[in-house]
Length: 314
Image (tube, rainbow, N blue to C red; front, top):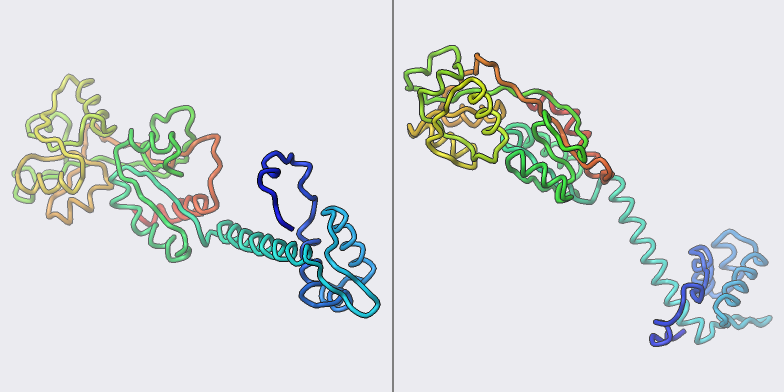
């Protein structure tokens, strides 16, 4: 069967033959077996039923696929071409079905997670490792950023899931609570205040701070607390990564106020972590996602892994 593409462009949908994959399979099996009898045994259907299937396909196509005599069966030239096409269609369907099953079974796909840096550094590596071990065919992309970046990644559809502070979340996003995160001050081990039990917000005003940028929710939150108390913090140096904050503190540039997730980074850099005692500063952490967007099987699987392993990752 040769396709006239110039006519095909003008062809409406009703001109496409209404054939099922079962019918295509029947035609291909007859051609492969070389007889109706052998094909009926292979397909486990009666010969009369198989004959009716062929007649229906030929009627739908307006073509004769097989020439049958009392002694033999021959495939017509049109039948040869149609059978080649039917085999390609069935093969494509088989590949697509297997592909969809792999995606549904979380053996293939992609998950994009946008996270605030403290969570990405402290909590996610162990969770990602466990998820990847169970589903090695799923690609995982982690996007690290500040709170606003995470919300925009989810809102725009760039990320499947976001992990950030959920005290205030836009109405178009749904949130799932995970835990609360306390804030700590990190100082060098030889700092004169390193042996204190904790810091108050008022005490922070006496020291230069290494801080995240103004657009960071953490920075705005702390500045808001200071402003409400009539205090002014000394943001001496602004950086965008917690690793850089720790290096600057270690070098004596200043001290830093960071969320609890960044504490392992501080300890590995040889710094001392002290809790904020007055006021005790905590933020709610959770997962955010678009309300009207369903999760892919891979993303849903990652969310389940995250919720199940969150407490053990802290």
